[in-house]
Each structure stands twice: as C-alpha cells, then as structure tokens.
Length: 147
Image (tube, rainbow, N blue to C red):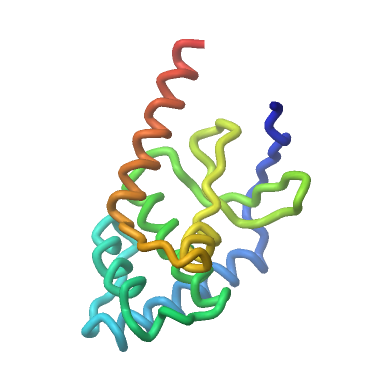
C-alpha cells in the first residue's frame, strides 16, 4: 500500500489569520470554562486543554470549535516536540494547516485530530496522545538516521 504524496509549503497569510482566530477562540474558552486559566502555547497547555475537552459545555461543540481546540493542541505539541512546525500540507484530498516533523514527509493533522475523536464519542487523554505522537516521531527520526 503506497502513501499518498505530501507536499509542504509555508503558511499563507489567510491561514496564519485563521490559526490566530482559533487561538483567540480557545483562549476565550479557557478564560470562561477553565477557571480563567491562560494558554501559553507550551506543553503546560495540555492540562488546560484537557479540562476543556472534558467540559460538559463542549460535549456537543461544533466542528469549528473542535478544530480551534486542535490548533491549540498543535501549538502545545510544537512547543514540546523539537522539529514540529506549522505548514500547509497538500495531498490528494486538498490543502490544510498541519504540523510537519523536521523536513520529513510526516504530517500531524492536529486541527482535525480532536474533532474526529469527539465525533466518535471517544474519551481523549491529551497528555497520552502527545506522548504517543512524540514516540512515533522519535522512532521516525531514528529510522531516517539509519537510512
């Protein structure tokens, strides 16, 4: 089974604005629903985001709200895993903002990652998810060094 080809590009100005709006939305949610806690775009945000994904008011949140939470999750991943950065990723299904690991053809679709789990009714453990992503990326880095 072959993997569809991915191409990566810098973020465009409109996408940068969309990500900023998503961050502002989640910052407002944290203020209101997580006891005034603030996001810092660091690994520490995982605990704030965890309280949000578990909050009763977000159980039936719409796609855009979950995508915004996914952007904040992506920021926490990028802050805690060296080599991750926001990029425009294109494949056969289209182009979207995602995280690229180093210059490798690996992308993490953080903006939709949480939505897909919420849609399936899955419980999310963001610290565990971040750790699993870290392990996969560390393994990929080792594999690329061995090649």
